[in-house]
Amino acid sequence: MVHPAMRLRAVLCLLAAGFVTSCSATPSVIRDEMAATSQVKSGAATIVFFTDFQCPYCRKAHAALAPIVEARRARLRVVVRHVPLPRHPDARGAARAAVCVETLTPALLDDYVHALFESQDISEAACEQLAVERGIDRDRLQRCLADTSTDARVERDLAMFDAVGGDGVPLLYVGRARIDGAPTRSSLEAAVDDAIAGN
Image 1: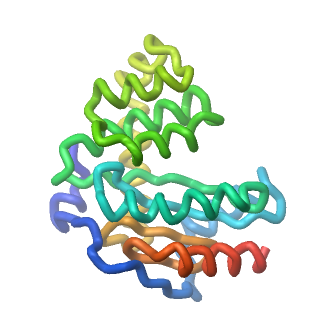
Image 2: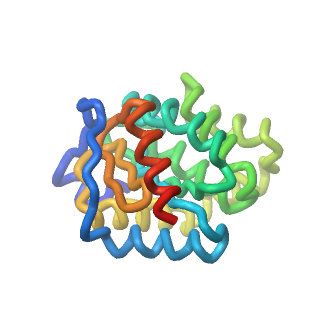
C-alpha cells in the first residue's frame, strides 16, 4: 500500500548535500518527540531521522550520523521514522522489518538499522535473516510482519513526514534544526553538538 501523498508527490531521494535550517516554528510532532526524550533520557537531545533504507543518500546520512551518535550516546535519543519511497521496491519491506525488530526487542533496533543500511540485499528474505542473526525469533518476527499494526505504524510515520512538510529523504531534525538532504559529517556534528548544548 502506498501512502496517498506519496503517490501525488512521487518523492525522490534528495540529491543536494544536506542543508541546515533552524526551525523557529518547530512542528508539533517534533516537539512531541522532544518531550518524549525528556521523559526517558533527561537532558538528552532528540534526533528524528526520516529515511528509506534503499535510498543511497539516506545511507550516506546514516554513515555520517552513526559515529556521531556512538560518541554521544548518553546525550542523544535517535528516533527512526520510515518513509519508504514507491520507486524503491524493497524499502517498505525493510521498514516493516525494522518496525517489528523495534516492537519485539527495542534494544536491537540500532544494530538492525545499521545492518539494513550496510546490506546490499534488503529483500524480504534478507531482512528476515538479518533480524534472526541478531537474536529475533523467526516465528515471532513472521507473526509481527503479518500483523496489520505493522503497516499501520509505517503509515503513521508517513503521516508524520507529511506533518513536517517533508518532500524528500533523508530529512533529519536535530533538536530544532531541520536538515534536508544528506549532510556532511562536520555539519551534522555541529548541529548535534548545538542540540546537546541547548538541553
